[in-house]
Length: 112
Length: 113
Image 1 (spheres, rainbow over the protein chains, first blue to last red):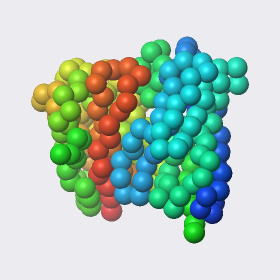
Image 2 (cartoon, each protein chain N blue to C red):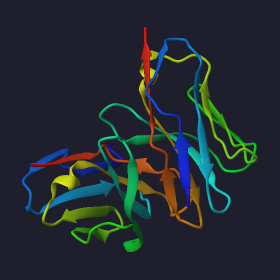
Image 3 (spheres, helix red, strand yellow):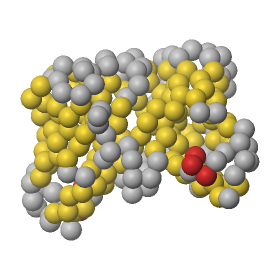
Image 4 (cartoon, helix red, strand yellow):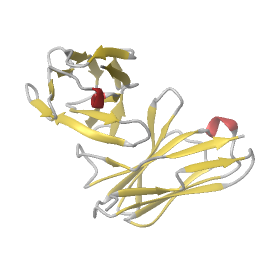
């Protein structure tokens, strides 16, 4: 069935380190891909998205590229800040299921 | 202005009680959702409504009943609360049903004792 696999957290990095959070998906049909972020005590908010193969979504220094051949949508940031500490969710939408399917989330902790 | 609001933010109640959570969006969106997030942060859709019509009804106990009086509101009523219902419940909305950005409310933390 449809699913999203994210790397287990927590991920702990020092400020200015490079970040990669891996995400792969199994989807029926041709999905649109998303990264959502949840800051402590808040709801989720969209970080970036990509709707077709080879598209790159980007926002606030974060990037992810839609790789259809490897069914992946890894999140990267060149230099993380303490304010990036949050839980990151990979997700996809297909018309077949008509809903967002989320991964289990990856907690990122950035320290000084 | 708050885009998607939920009340209450915290709800502590005893097993067997009936409770409601309210959600309102002022974005003019046609589609609204309820999600449940468990203690491990796993997020699962429960219901979605499009223009007051139920579109998605995942495998959720029928103790949970959503009600959409108009397209700006989607309330969640829970009967006979159980310990396992303890979670954070998020309301969300989007422009249309489809691969569109969903805007989430701040969540309601429900604790059943």
